[in-house]
Image (cartoon, rainbow, N blue to C red):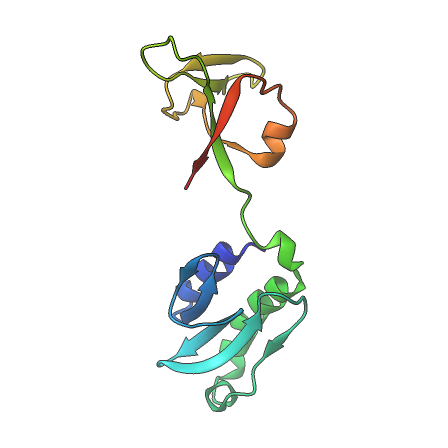
Length: 151
């Protein structure tokens, strides 16, 4: 499970989240993500180690069995995920490096059959994919293109 998905799932249950996520500080300082209930620590998961969480907080003991039955499968799935697999792949646009062109051109993939690459603007749409992950780029011939990171 990706970190972003984990955070979305626990927030959807009404729990707060704090900790470090990538370069974005949510509200804390270390390599842990804390789940909160009523602004108190409920439990934390370690972001650098698989299968490690700690629920020895006072408020955790006061969760009902029903609340634990909904929350803990999400926690278990996340902590079972290898830390290297918890983060999203970086995404890029591939810009053609030709100084004579008046405007930048980007490689895009036709979405209908997913076999035809062309050049165009950097606008993504239902018909054209212009943003690619590292693993997708590794399968492409990118000679003459520059990778532009996409947030």
